[in-house]
Image 1 (cartoon, rainbow, N blue to C red):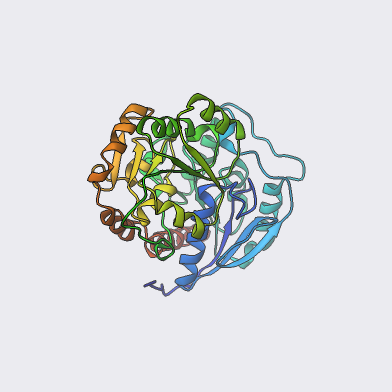
Image 2 (cartoon, helix red, strand yellow):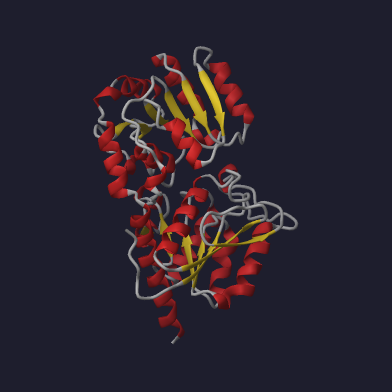
Length: 366
């Protein structure tokens, strides 16, 4: 049951500018924002979500602004300069933050973009930054590091592995993540099929999942936004023996119904995932996870207990782990999700962080 603090915060959640909430373009940030909004609301805080036009939310009030989406950082080079498109939705969102700042006790920035970090010192309202990715660019490293230097505690990340990609990673807060476990149905008896969930884009390693499915002779069901169709076509062309089915980008409720029936979830990123929300969701359904021992998923999967961790990019090792999946107790997967990744657990950690950020800002103003 949600607990309530004695202080009620007025919180503005500033979403990712890469696309409307509900479109799937924001990847794991969308799930994170939904969980934080619902969890803080249940604890008695007043939550407003600021997002691109066309967004939908299930908790809190919603303010939207029009504009051109930001290019995702993960497809840009490390040394590329900071850019904003004409009629930038990111610029419009943060102009809205500036105009409304007196209405809030704290603003949570969920955008992995340079502008919010640069603007934070110029705003009267304290800004808490929840960083959603590992180190991807020199400009972003410098912007995040500058905030860490002058506002200790104002920057949080999802996992220790993510934080370790930054030179200042030992000075940020690690929050993990969480979901509304009640929306995920435990399935004790699976069907003989594998799952892969995520944006279909180069850094997610979909071709490795095709290779594993081909090696073990099981069908592969894929859920997620078809961001780069060529990634799917190249994987299919390279692995003719893989029986892969694209299920589309679905709501959480529909996704979990299909995911729960799978024998195992394959997690194959070719970069450092900040956390790995899909692994958390799979465990909530009782689905074991077979993941590369890289990034956030390596902190979610208990090797040999809720799935298996294999050397990064080692397809043969992943296939061998899938053949052992019967050793994993699906009930143990669900129990770990309930213990570690509940919505209330996440909300409690975020609440404590925001109270600290607000208190620190009040001290600095004196």
